[in-house]
Length: 603
Image (cartoon, rainbow, N blue to C red; front, side, top):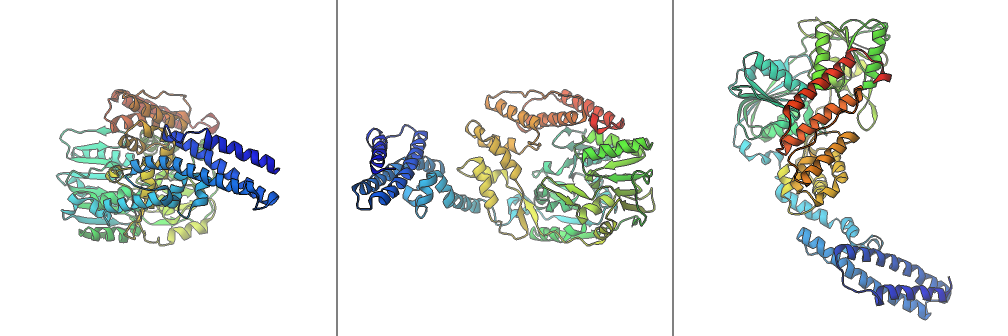
């Protein structure tokens, strides 16, 4: 480019930014737009100045003019940035200056602007961390001051599956005047609710999907996320205590151990959770007793090879790791004149229960199941056969770990029905034996999640900024880890426009309603309900059934659950009779599809 052409380019820039433009800004958006244009102009000028130096030398008058023009543009740029930064200072109650923010970050500032530079410097994150340090107690136990005034007694029931841990705990619960059972699954909460009521102990049921009140009840069976930390109980039972080490849901078990207001607390867990639980209980200065339970029937790995479907026998549980595979296996067995009950994670609890009852009543011969069978399901299974030894965990396909294999294999040989249980696999039998025989390492950390009060009490910041700051907060006790809240953050990224129209408390409570946002229909429904909150609509539209195939019915069942959860979370009226009827009909339709052993191509 010739020197005359470069001179003309510089003249155009000078005219655009230093002669014809006003220095005042109508709004922050106006300032951000001007800042972006000025940054582009400064970058272009730097290129032209270098070309002048190459073509005419540093002594050329155009070189000095270009540098002077660039300096004046940089001054204008800082004026625009100051307007933007002023709005930031108002929001965060700070007094940052442009020079303070861009110190040692000049190049980055001229490339990306004041807001990006502010993020890069970490100044805001430091501010959040200071606030979080002031708000969050050094030890998570101190987030429950009322509980700390109690002297609690813990009984840890440690042992493998089929060792009677939960059975013994529930005997104690039934004898109490007021008690609570905390379950990892709605199905288990439902079973305890029915069992106590059948045995003359009135009991309520509370899950994310329903609330059923029994006359005169002073006991409650609930999913652990629904635990009440205000009530005082005589006895509490926390089931599947080893879940305290789960990155997604473990925080609920940590809260229960640290915060539950019960005089006596029974924790049922696998042996690897005992040391960690003892540490937490000691921190709370509560008493603890350990009761070791042993398996009540021996578990034997069969030496003979297993061929599918030739070697399938009545009383078998065949383990696979997807709905598609479960349906394929059940279909093949139907061709061999064996009927199967099918169990997998996405089944409605009512359907899962009906499938179980078919097996209990010997209307089906075998069970085909995913690892959904591994937690709390007591079935008359004689042998567990692993048709697959790998699973997709949401991120990758991986081998089952030893604890997963023990949880699933342990369902074989139910006491009172069989004297022993058997385990087999179609391949990698040596690996199966090794993992069943190994000692699982002790859990190293309990997971914690941000408290509503912590996030909502921060005086500034968007919801995403607050939660991201929490993910960077350093927990001061080494055996606590922060829960994985990436799904909530991803959902909030999608819902970021709603931060401008909904109170931060409202959006936080909406984002923490459990549902699978990766299912497009459910995500659309959730956004529709946010729109209802935005316009102050007093009722929510009901979801519609979009088909009669298995996958469609399963999504519809979960959509009913989202309708119920959203309404109850925000105190909105909802049609309970419709919810009850649609859940029942949908679960029955799914049950009939499974009962008829449909080929996967029809599903």
